[in-house]
Amino acid sequence: MRPPQLSLLLKDHGKGESFEMLITRGASHSFLAHYSPPSSPKTLISPLLPKRRRLFSSLLPPSFSSSHSSVARRTLGRRNSTMGASSAVRGSAQKLENADELIDSVETFIFDCDGVIWKGDSLIDGVPETLDMLRSKGKRLVFVTNNSTKSRKQYGKKFETLGLSVGEEEIFASSFAAAAYLKSIDFPKDKKVYVIGEDGILKELELAGFQYLGGPADGEKKIELKPGFYMEHDENVGAVVVGFDRYFNYYKVQYGTLCIRENPGCLFIATNRDAVTHLTDAQEWAGGGSMVGSLCGSTQREPIVVGKPSTFMMDYLSNKFGILKSQICMVGDRLDTDILFGQNGGCKTLLVLSGVTTLQMLQSPNNSIQPDLYTNKISDFVTLKAATV
Image 1 (cartoon, one colour):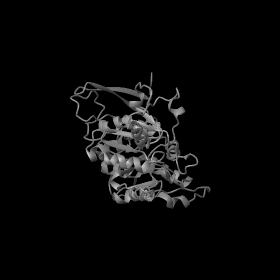
Image 2 (cartoon, one colour):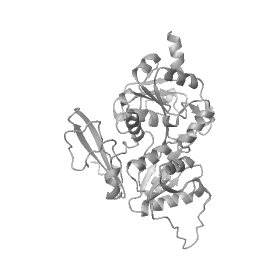
Image 3 (tube, rainbow, N blue to C red):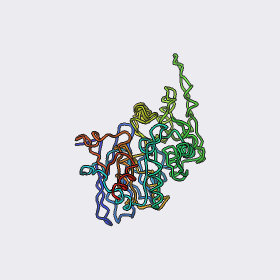
Image 4 (cartoon, one colour):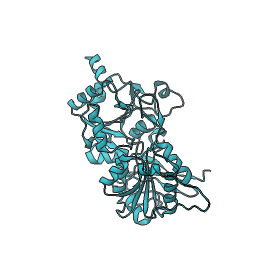
């Protein structure tokens, strides 16, 4: 007997495939996740589920007002969890031996950045030659990162500084995903967004035409806790976006908590829940998940996650470029974000051991997430080709 969780089984009669959907209920918060297949099913087996929308599935808090919820359910990908592809029984990952076979089997490569293209501010060996080779073969390259500290334009400058020619339209950061998600649900322009995060989120919200407050400026604010002190907050805040924040403090935690708990229908959006990140190439640093976790604890709410492994960005990319997901290979260094992101999206997956994950971690009996293939670094595309010539 599982009072907090109710599993629903839907059947897509058009494809004959079954998908288990989970409704999770908490004392103060619940959310509904439902699957939106490429083609509409002939039947829906539960009156609990709303009408299916065209592009994306959703995860929404019940407090989200009805004026927003009907449009919001159009867009968000499946929840950041190990539900879905990772729960299926998978064999052990195979070492990449035939680079040409993988390259010829897909038309698009999605690359994570930290630990795949660079570490900190250092380019990983062989990356320029590898990207040039893939482009020469007519492959579409897309760069997706959970790091929300920069906007797409700022990431474009980082690529340029490292000697890589990458267009802004090829870059998808979780800062952009947060703004794109709000646009996709027709978030009211008269509402404000409170940001716990850095400049990248602010710039993307501004480009999307949204009002915002918070960000690095609130990093210097302090709360003087004295008898009778009452902290005010803007009641017109309709969403709190939480990302990686080096200026994180108690003021931000309290302000975000007040908005989420006291403003009717206020959304709690996380750019990602990464445990660690690569700020330098010397060690791992606490990631955005630590900031998100603080708000989860204070609000007793689970966030809408727009970064990996949620499929929101995958759905967005597939729709924008008209790409079949079966023709995509996701390349990343993290099992629980990059590889799960690819698996949840129905793509081929390649793990590189140049970042977070080691071969020992991959092959550990405690690891249930297995990519299709693994290799040391993406330059193996070039060296393995040379070895077979």
